[in-house]
Image 1: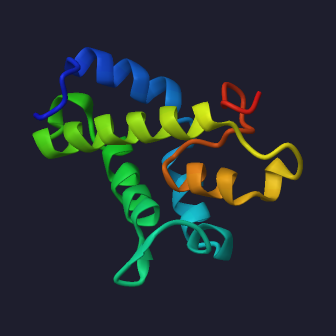
Image 2: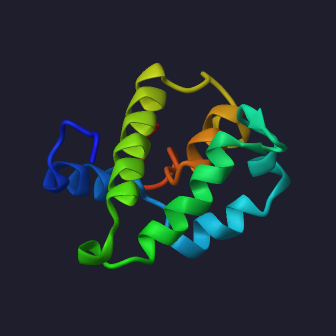
Length: 117
């Protein structure tokens, strides 16, 4: 595992920041809004690809996670923290690329506990 954080730290931050349920995230990934944001590589954005990995991780028991999954969880936590610290748009947050990008990474900033609240 390449992260300098312990698994307990990653787990705690993951549980706090990844606030979308697996089915909710899976449904969002099917929308045009989800597919409209992010850096595209081979047709699928990095965030969209990450979202599919997040769904799998959220459906995996903690003691069955692989080192690769732990590394991705640390990456997701870092992305959400950086993106949230930038702050969202001053208006129309609900339909913003900022929100859609965060949602691809499993964080709805408008949900309870989201970084826009």
